[in-house]
Image 1 (tube, helix red, strand yellow):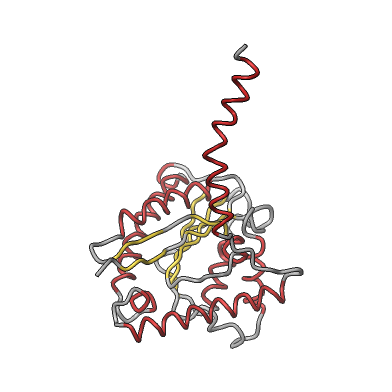
Image 2 (cartoon, one colour):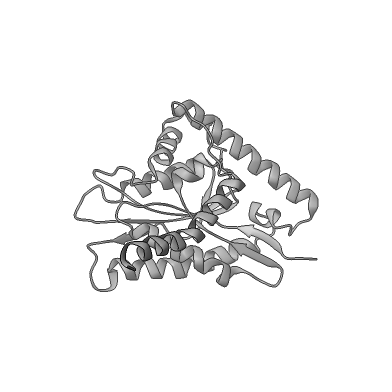
Amino acid sequence: MGKAIFEIPILYGSQTGNAEAAAIELASLLPKELSSPTLRIISRATHLDDFLEHGAKWTPLFVIITSSYGVGQAPIGCHKFRELCDHILTQKSGEDDALLEGCNYAILGLGDSKFTTFFLNPTVIDSALSKAGAIRLGKLGKADASGTGENVQSKIIDEWCNAILLDLKFALKDKNSLVGKSVGMLGKDEEELANKSLNAMQQNTLSICSNLFEDWQVNEPKETDRRAFSVYMLLLPIVVGIVVTFLFGK
């Protein structure tokens, strides 16, 4: 029997690139640190808005790394996701409370404490996910660009990532959780129930988004698009080389 495959996406919003860099680094680390003889972990960094626009395919375990921008607003790649979170928080109790019930998440916030609202966006997202029924793993990370000494931002990011690895490992071993059921720890019937739950999360999220955003449509990348892009990237250096040779090789 082959390994079970389990995805832990790293979803991010980033204005200056620091949150994006942290997300990419963590995504490259998880497969090496969390895979086992029976379980293959896959992970990739994706904009929070792209996650929604590509189908809102929730997984039982996900990580968010995001900053704030301006007066506590969402950074690049996080605007729609923030609106979704604002919507969840403004709903009456009971309306969206079970939207993400059973999911686990971790969240790291970046910002600069020179601004009083520097941590507002991560806080709003954390509160919305909790209200929607998801359970946070570990602490809400706070990486301050104005931090000094032991609290310098890069050090806080590294410490949070190291700590969250342990929390993710424990979550993967929890046989009674949605995570455990999704990786087949409790058998085929439980895994099917977990998949039904995730499908319901996806459809309910897409329904909310279609009501929130004008001209909303899911733009899931097609396999042909991915292949075309790959071919383009392979041919680009060749084309550039030919042009350079033609212009300067005489």
